[in-house]
Length: 65
Image 1 (cartoon, rainbow, N blue to C red):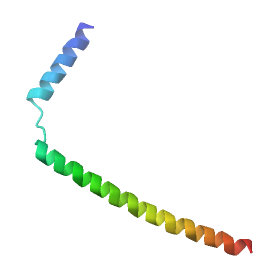
Image 2 (image 1 turned 60 degrees about the vertical axis):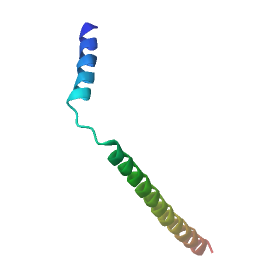
Image 3 (image 1 turned 135 degrees about the horizontal axis):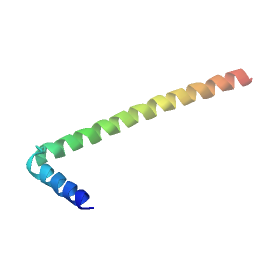
Image 4 (image 1 turned 180 degrees about the vertical axis):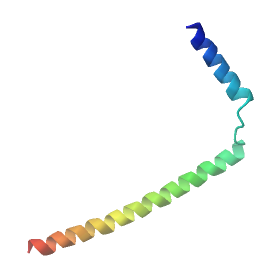
C-alpha cells in the first residue's frame, strides 16, 4: 500500500514539474478547431449516408417491380 501512495505522489510531482503543458489559449483554440472539424466530418458522413440509402432504396424498388 505504501508503494502505491509513493507512486501516486511521484506521478503528481512529475505532472506538476516535468510535463510541458500546452498554454491555455492554444488549448482552447485547438479544442474549437477539433469541434468544428468534427461537425463538418459528421455532416459529410450524414450526407454520404443519405445518398447511399436513397440509392439502395431506389435499387430495391427497381428490382422488386
